[in-house]
Length: 483
Image 1 (cartoon, one colour):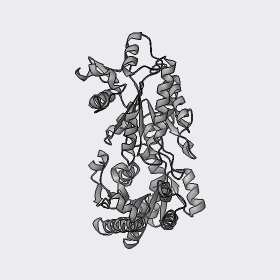
Image 2 (cartoon, helix red, strand yellow):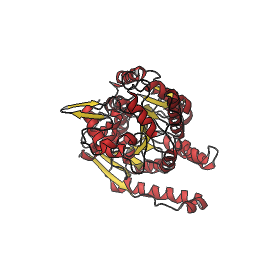
Image 3 (cartoon, rainbow, N blue to C red):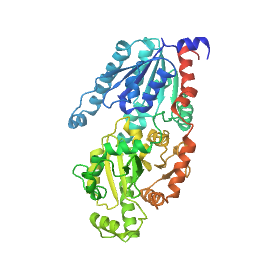
Image 4 (cartoon, rainbow, N blue to C red):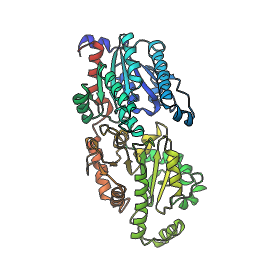
């Protein structure tokens, strides 16, 4: 790097990270902020909405300053439906002027704006105009295409989707530089949008790593009540844990501590984790249907047809035989619009060997849970077919193999039979669950092979390295004004 660039990227330099959304739920932009502060030695201003708490590393860094915007007020659904075009217009204007005020007045003048896309409207226009007024560079980080997300609710043929597409393309081309998340998206931007983008793959930061047995035990001790006795729920997991209720906390559903030794219990359920935003581009019914199929197929194999949870538990306890297939506990993390609908569907299921628990975890506990799980499930399908699910990246960082929905570019991330498996239907997922968990926990060779593959593939791939190699040169280039 030349002397001029180093001076630009010195401690006096400044960057603004812009997210028209909940910053605590935007992990990639959080990692950008940390890298800008640590690796580029810049002061960083974050302009975003509040809501979820960002990772503690963001809050503790003295070079990172968070500026929280006021959100568009909630409008009754009936009003939104009747006056839909007007509501859209006024919401966009409100967001534009709020964002523009923060970018031009509330924060110091930055050398570069880095903005998350989507949403595109009105974000890209506000950032472009602010960058022009403040003589700053402007980089778009393409996570997906906003018009394809809008098309999920309005249909691709909607005139609003066509207008959004034009807006996104026009202001996207006006940026000084672009980052994107896949080679497929890079090709699409180059061929059909006239935009040259640099691929910056999502990679896990250093705090996504395999969890030690001591960390697992502490985590499960904290979650003991929620997992064994969830309020208003009686499932196949809680049915066999009453004896743990009044016991010393040295024993949990998954771990036990004897003297100074901590070990995983051989009769524990398999822990499966799925993180979801509960949005239309993730069909959660696939997982529910696969869970029902697993439950029924295992019941048929073990001659448990017609038995209830208590009878299955009694048979298991008194048979003295090793159980071929384990109980499955699915922990579903995340927030979103369809959560309550699916929670009600879960409550209506009658399952003997499968249980579900929805949770919202802190940014510190989430990696610990991934590192403690046996399998990850990803239901992301991508509205554009060109982005990759960051949740899978996080799972791989924690050494967790994944079963993911198959779509056009997912194999850029999931290497079939190396670090995970793909499925296109609930039946396929059920078959994979049966294959992976047969003989759990000691004799499930396919699952062990996938976990080893995750560790081999992901051992050297980290966010800091990827950002240093691909994002930092682009940021240096646009700050210095190079063409």
